[in-house]
Length: 110
Image (tube, rainbow, N blue to C red; front, side, top):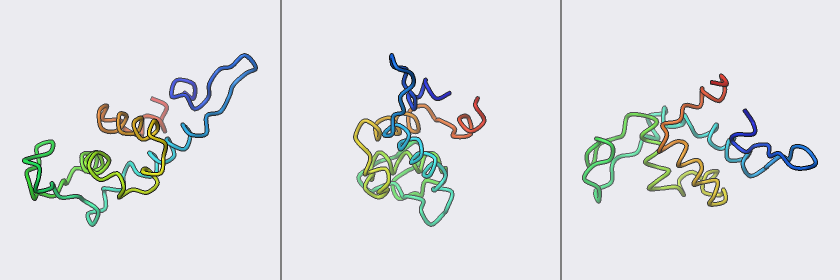
């Protein structure tokens, strides 16, 4: 559970903790449901025809798609995410945007 996501890494002397990876997981935990607050829902920008089925000017009502949109288009809007090293931001984007990751899977150890 902790080795596969590289929170802990096996070394010759035992297990080594990766604080950057741990911070990335904590940031993902903090962000994963923020778009459930309607006031934060993004609207598809005028320079895009559509985003995941949402057309220009429409609010993105699905909280997971909304977060993916912000992570991809406006990462600076989320300082805890923007402040991570690039490798960790890329890991979060991949986990959330490409895999449709469900944070409950980690919490429930599924």
